[in-house]
Length: 231
Image (cartoon, rainbow, N blue to C red; front, side):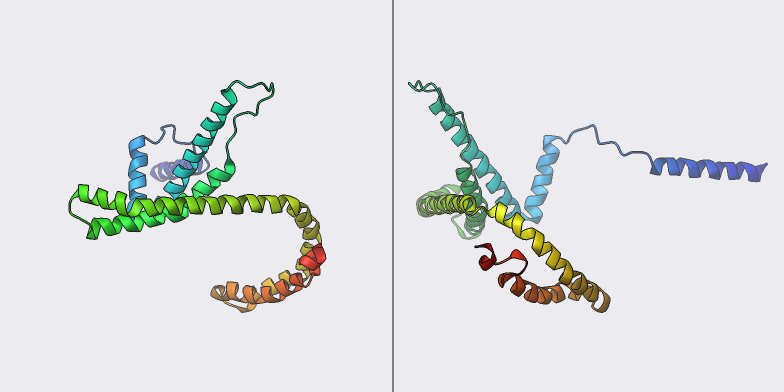
């Protein structure tokens, strides 16, 4: 009787375990509290300070630009006009991306290293530190910001114009078909012999060397690639 009870107990335990394994995972009904989000953000600042500041600055700058352009277009739309048709409120996405790139890549990086240096080597007085920051550093930073924003806007608009005029998507789709067929004649063998005869740490190097021949073939016009084939 004891052995059978033990077996029954073990069997019941196995069934319970298997039932737990295949039980669907339910999402946590309790949302993350703001304090928990703040704690996680502080941990990211401790472990990845520059990266976290760059992402934060890019998001905040993009949001501010989107909000400003939306409010500006809303005020323009609400003004009385003789024209019956008025353009709806919209966001200037060129400005949004320009501010995001400048805020994430340029402003956040400069401010990170500047404030690190100021905290270590700057004046001991907070008032003096603020004066140094506002009178010495902020004016050239504003000049740099406007220059960068103008350059970014011009490049983004030029890229969009070239993208539309050159019919990039249509040409890419028409060239992809022959290129895929040609790639199946080359890359399966290159990948197979790489996997078979080389170590894992050499995979990327070997395939990059193989890509020299593939890139030369595409640049020559094979598979629909290259300017000669597309023009």
